[in-house]
Structures are given as C-alpha cells and as structure tokens.
Image (cartoon, rainbow, N blue to C red):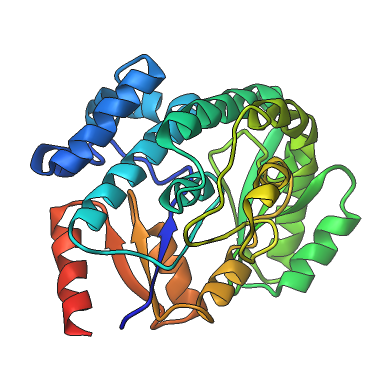
Length: 307
C-alpha cells in the first residue's frame, strides 16, 4: 500500500481566491471556513476569497488565512480517502501539520497562530529587518559569509540544494547578499520586513512561549517532523520546538530527506505549489503534486489510483 506524507505551506503562499472553489463545492471545506470565522471573530473567509491582496498579505491576516485554507484542503482530501502516515509544514505550515496529526485542535491552533502573527509583526521596527533568497551556492559558503558579516545575519531556511534564505538586520543582510553575488551566487531581496528565523526574533519567541503554555498538546496519531530538528517528535517536545522555530533555521531540505526514508511520496496540501517545487529539487520523483482546488484534487486522486 502506498505510504503518503503530507506537507503544508507557510507564509507567502497566500493569494486572493484561495480555497473558495473547494468551499463552494465541498461541505467539509465550507465547515472549516465557518469555524475559522467564528474562532477569529471576523470574516477570515472573505479575506481569503475576496481580499484585497494588501490586507491578505499582512502577517496578521496571512498566517491564519493560510492555516484555515490548508485545513480546508486537508478536510476535502480526507473526505476523498487520502491519508498520511507522516506530516510536516514549512514554518507556519508546521501548525497545520500538528492539527493534521491530532496534536492540537483548530479551536486551539487558530488563536495561537493569531498571537504568533501579531507578535512577529510587532517584533522588529519596520525597516530594521530583511530577508534574502540565495541561490547557486553551497550551504557552507553562505554560512561562512554570514558568520563574518558585522551585524545580525544568518541562514533562515535550508529550502533545497542550492537554495537558502538569509535573515537578520537589513544592512547586514544586504551586505551578505552583495558578497554572495560576488561569490557567484544569485541573491534576491524578499518583500518581507519581519526577519523570521533569525536571532532578532528571540525576544518575540519568549513572549510567544507564554501563549504556547496555554495549549495542551496531545500525542500525535501520526509522525510530525519539526522544522527545528528535522525528525519526528512527541507531544512533550512541541512547546519548546515551536518557541525555537521563531529564531531557528527552517531545516526543510533535511526534513524532506528524513520523510522520504519513511514514506513513498509527498503531497502538498494548501495554497500554491511552492513546496512541490522545492521537493522536486531535493528528489525529482518525490513530490506527487498539490491539492488546492478541485482540478488539482482530481489530478492527485487519479495519480494515487494509478499507483
């Protein structure tokens, strides 16, 4: 029997209209959005379906919106008989993975993610932080360059071979990006002011720990691979891992390589196909595709049936 792993996207995957077709077609998706609206206390579903984009892109809206959409996609996938034996998510996506594994409920996770989004948005004054995508260089070259730049700059994401993200103070990130270009790499400054997964988020993580402490995590029914250590973890580990995740690098490539020792193939659940692209750079045959609307759902179901 085919062993599936599910992966869930993080911030940046949002777009206006995400989830609407599934919510209009499947009662399971509609119920997720209705519950999300009730928990949030505002029409999160309307922001997902109608935007505007500038509101959806704000961290405080983007994070709960992506979470709700991913959970709606998951509910539909499960209603069609798809199930995973292992899950993981990129940064914010890890919270969807925890719900998928039964470690936390939607009623618990949405307020937690809303608090996370608020604290992240308030963590660093506008214009002080920055992130940049670095491509075409070995990890060691990027790490060594960051280590000798004055100021705070560090690897934030190990996305795939030759694709990393650096994060930290704006001037330090820009200087590192310039040096990495000179070393033969490609560097693109990202339209993100929150320096996620860098030491600048340490104080934010301490405040967030108080929010995490209010949640009771249950033992997951399937394995959850953490961004921080790229292995499966128990309920007792989740609070510390989620706190560390804010200032630690996302070990996505390492997480995917671990997952592929345990499952046959991976399916992305949620808006966009960014993770599918990264996974195929790690292992060309490892990603089956994604589920974000009826067309992509039917495509996945057809592929699963053919195996």
